[in-house]
Amino acid sequence: MNSNKSIGLLAKYMAIKQPENYVQTMYVWIDGHQNIRAKTRTLNFVPKSVTELPIWTTDGHSTYITETNAEIYLSPIRMYNDPFRGGNNKLIFCETLYEDFTATQSNTRHSCNAVMDMAADQEPWFGIEQEYSLLDGTDRNKPLGWPTGGFPGPQGPYYCGVGANRVFGRDIVEAHYRACMYSGVKIAGENAEVMPSQWEFQVGPCKGISIGDDLWMARFLLHRVAEDFHVAVTFDPKLIPGDWNGAGAHTNFSTKAMREKGGLAEIEAACKRLEKNHAKHIVKYDPSGGADNARRLTGKHETSSMDKFTYGVANRGASVRIPRQVADDGYGYLEDRRPASNMDPYVVCEQLVRTICLNE
Image 1 (cartoon, rainbow, N blue to C red):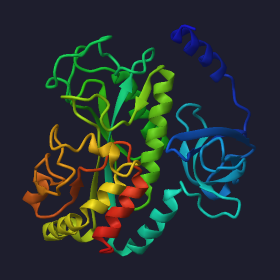
Image 2: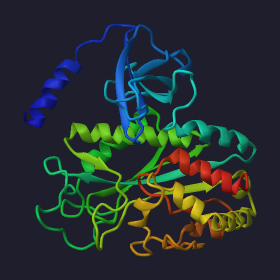
Image 3: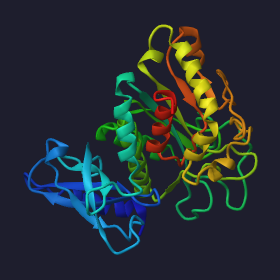
Image 4: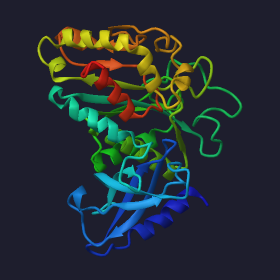
């Protein structure tokens, strides 16, 4: 069906008045392969707090969480406004639990939350720069806007570019931005990236565990918005081999001491701890244990070498960058440029806190 006709037909049904005190709640969760799943139930009241929401169940086997045909629990943890259905309808972000209410193996939030509580007195803050690429609606093997069977012109004019010959998919980016703002995700910005059809959005600053919740919900919203445009999203860290930039999820981090006067010394001390634990972090910074990042962290295309840890002021080729403004002010935050675009934010942020705050 013609996509414009389909959108017009849907609008007719979405305009039907929704009965009072009945809301649609879409439960969203992460499956065993780090994909996002969702399903909807009707409630006969408008929830004011996540504590009012019922626990639900889903098929654990079909979502790669259990090896047997067992159900798992979906336990609501965060509630967001629903930008697709509007009104009082909600998006419910959930943790996955086994039948004894323990965290499933793929539920990395549970461990991360415990570590954040251990370091709560240091007030860890995070910001994540999520890079991604858009894929053509009819040929999912090529980036959106790329010529069939060929390549666009070399990198250079695309980063933060303007114009139909330099950027592809801005309508999706704008729709996603507004959807995040409406939902309550703490989105901070967006920009076109170095490779054509590659984009970035930023989430934060967020305190503790909320960074993972908001980033996962932002990823869900991106997939869902792109679906309406019949376009796919990929978080592959090195989508196109050769002289093309990969995609990362640069993670900005600070503690209360780093954000105060004289905090630069704390940042430099944190970098030294990160250097000692470089191999441990690399294993945690993509779901494959480093194999995905090995395609990206080559020392080229604005990346550090995977085999060596480096840090420096305003150095976008280092493992960790200390922003120029931070060096000028003498306090602020650091940017870990090693995490891959397909990283799990709970795993990455937990590891940062373990190394920097807990000195593990």
